[in-house]
Length: 62
Image (cartoon, rainbow, N blue to C red; front, side, top):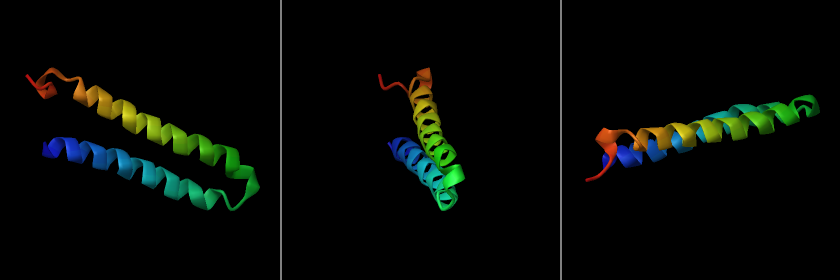
């Protein structure tokens, strides 16, 4: 049970970390497209890694 909360915390933490670093880039207009790309990339990498972790045979509830 605590691993599930840890996983969701990691997803939220990764998303906030990537979003926080790219938020400072949004101050200049030339980095705005890159910041949006990296925010979404970080979110989907975190979600995909959590889904792969859930699909491990040792983590499937019987």
